Length: 452
Ligand code: SF4
Image (cartoon, rainbow, N blue to C red; front, top):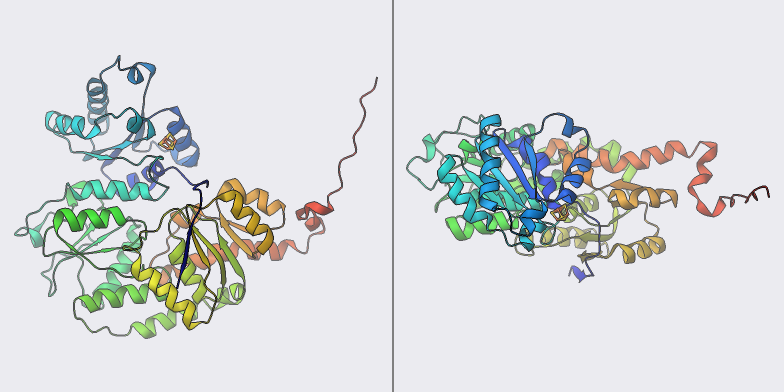
């Protein structure tokens, strides 16, 4: 049995408003307006790096003293900004991102959005992706869950819906409609589409689509399936509000996960799979070079992006020893199949079960890292350099969010990320200043007394 523990929640992660950085590029006609303070602005400006110089389709609505003390009217201020956005950028949709401040001030964003939606004739989606309630990737979850409410309900128009998106099939299908949800790059979306098509399955729509107008019809006969492990709210919204059926499957990360994901979808539609075993074997074969580097290496996930369980399962299959899986939050129903898969892999490989720590405490984790001395720690930037300076090899966890991980082909990217610090350290071993990584060996600097 998997061993779940919960700590204090004193851990580093990105604020969920960071989802703006990948969602504005995915939904090409969108504009994101983050309604918050300078704190949120500083975070986005720093986290997005050079992207801020490329005229991104996002902006901050910075709350002023007058907003907080209710001297300014929220409706008038937001209306002014939305008119400006409409005139300057002409987007297909404006997404308002609520922050900690809008939560604390209890600004009725949904009410104002409804009014402005009608007045300005532009769809406004409200997502409360604040740092009070959510961690990092869950920001995408709140945006997608809000978008589900905007999807058309008309089943009659299903196969002729305005999908110009070339990754979506408009052919009639032999099975009930299947909608996939989760933001992935177009290349990854195409690869997964090809894999499903080769089993005779057509995808009827994606959330998010490339353009707001391409939101798929979602209503009762639809089946939905998630790509990412952190989209539990979106799944629940589609089930509760649109009466769709959720296909619970392990997530398509690693050759093992991709095969299990495809098999589960086929099983739900009573389709016999063909050639998946060979496809998986070929994918593992292409990873041989990396597997040699990772086998029997231990890994510790400090936990900040909710991809940890799927990655841990894939890395276990690769022969790595998982010391701890830190994770901000586990929805045990949405991730049920992934958790079961991990449990089965550990049992089959006769490996002791690592602890799964929800809401980890970074301070306690550092104590455990000091004791366990793992070969690799997957962690945020706050701890990466300090750990490296103490001789612990690290991989920055945020990179997993921005790399292409899904499907058979991209399994290589996961191992490339994992092995980068291992390969680099092996190369640096030969350098004479390697001993600097051991703090014990550094001589204290002699104090020079200032001249009197
Ligand atoms: S945690 Fe809250 S205040 Fe900080 S950046 Fe995120 S939304 Fe803004």
